[in-house]
Image (cartoon, rainbow, N blue to C red; front, side):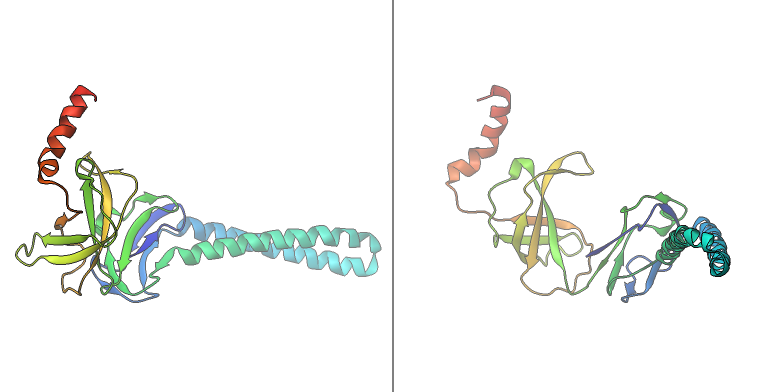
Length: 234
């Protein structure tokens, strides 16, 4: 999915879409509180107008007195500086209304938790996922991290429809384990669906991953031996 992040430090003013709404490319998603930016933009525009007026006045004086010509370069630089500042703030003003970069389903939590919340530049706020581009995201516990090659079989049993498994093929297994919300560590697994599905994005379940064939005694003793090694140290 396309990840929508905060374009600058600010406060979220409100959302213009609801969770799981289908949005189009260019559709407004949410807005920032732009009161501070608007006031700074007005000050910058006034400063630009003052600098331009001063430049025009000195330009007219330079026609009759050569000593004013040396000031034109300095004043021209000042005008460009004020113009650049005004253009930057104008861009910030436009970016305070965040648009969707693609069409898809808007995925985010309760909007009331975001309204009025200060966010920093780059903080993830929501995602936009294309309904036709769906894959399986699984988590492989560190203790069960068996070798899985790309293309290994994966079967997803959704909690909503446990009797209708979804078959997939492993695309990759992350190199590093990351912390999960429950405090455990696991490797992220991504798997591509073997066929299209009508299940909506975001459903939870259990995924069964199949590695290569191993001797039965190894399969039975692998985890007990791993536990013993933690205490014995060999």
